[in-house]
Length: 481
Image (tube, rainbow, N blue to C red; front, side, top):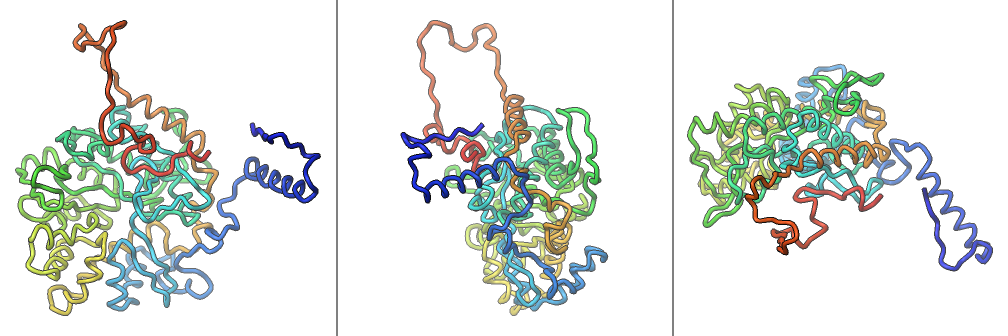
């Protein structure tokens, strides 16, 4: 119910102009609250929405032909690019190609437990001012409910696609974090499913499957039976609703300790520990979750930087069947040369990561040094083409080159699908299921009724109510609705 309050002012006492303005505002408020939301409005963020293959001038290219195989379309696009245009695609902030009608694209959006503000691909300054925030992953994982994890991934995906349709988000999100939480001194443990490889693996499968569209068109009755909505097939193996990214590959669970930092740390891990502990979540994320992105981490693994370790990245592609793109963590390519001193020059660092199988650099290092690397003969243009094939293939699977997204499978999603009562109820249910209270059996803890004692809330968020959502939080629904 809407309650309109005026302070000692009646409608009769208003001037005619103020009356007109008042009723005009009231009419607009009524429309917002009770009319059916449209996927796109006439606001500038929608009417000026930029997308490739825009008719009539840019829709006749072969890469716009949806009847052709994905690989054929990607190769066609690559063949039309100059070397400099190719290099400009190797950053998270990929440049526009105006002569082909291709606008710039931001690969970096975040959605760890809801749409977050961390990545530059997301903006809440628009028609959609907020999104549903779910519990931090460490809490959700404690529910041990695979259906719950899948539902959360699906709900975030619906809101992400809704924001994309309004030009407020990308289609490629760098979540989930499935690193093993071995050491409580690692500040990012809250982002992960915990210390158990089996739980982390199960979480990766369910979240990624739900997020990439595995549940699209499927309605859940509570947490039990599911039925396919009319007109939907529940997703396909080739097409993607969104792209999820399993990070950080691999053996990454240290931020800063003593003289060590995540940029220079060398994780010395036995082959057995890799296979038993660190790799299972990533293997499951790829093989069962079908993740379309993998992020290599800052740290070195047994002396070789993760983003430059060919056998590590080859294992994902060749042994686990990974089909997608590999991104560096932000500035992780620069660390190969600048922090880890693994190479003697910037060009050697570029050559090492591209030949290892990394496709895109979060940051500007490849933009600044790839051309000189080619001129020095350390890499060939064909090495860049391999990376672009992976990048464009994922974009094509997302429908980015299929024309106006408003006419696509997910074009009906909009503001009405964000911060819904269903999503907020799901977030509350996830919180309830994830909270674990231990019984004070045999009075192990010195807590007694009627006895005065003090409780301390400690940590970096103890006095900051605005950060109660934890890391990777966006604008939360209740702040704006």
